[in-house]
Figure 1 (cartoon, rainbow, N blue to C red):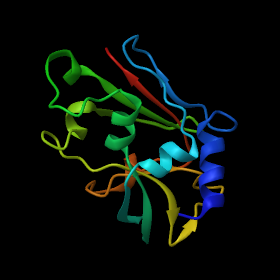
Figure 2 (figure 1 turned 180 degrees about the vertical axis):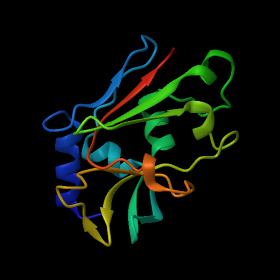
Figure 3 (figure 1 turned 90 degrees about the horizontal axis):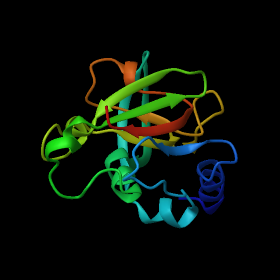
Figure 4 (figure 1 turned 30 degrees about the horizontal axis):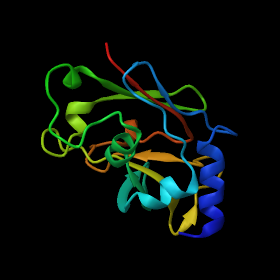
Length: 155
C-alpha cells in the first residue's frame, strides 16, 4: 500500500474525519486505526458488480478489524456473543447491520471487506474514503459508500 494512503486512512480512522469505531458495550474497547494497525491487518481483494460497473477493490476484512478491536473473539462465538450486531453507517446516514454470527468464518462465512482502494486507486470522495463490500450479496444494497462509523452493539 502506498504510504500516503496509510497516512490518509490513519488520519480518518483516528477521528479527524471519520469517527471510527464506537462501542455500546462496556466489555469492548475502541481501537485507534493508525497506520501501524491498518498495515498490520492482511489485505484482501474483492470484486463486485455495483450498478452495472465491476469494481476490483482491496481493503481489510471486517472480521479482522473487529478482532483487532476486541469486538469479536478469535474463538468460535458462543451464547451472548451470537446476539451482537455490527452497525455500519455512511456519511449520509445510510445504515446496514450484520450479526457477528453471520460474519464468523466458521459459522455464517459472510465475507465483508472494508475497501480503501478500487481499480488500483484510492476511493474517490463520492465513494470513500472507505467502502464496505459484500461480494456474496446478490445486489449491492449492503455495500455502503463513505463509511464513517462502525458500532458493535449488544441488544
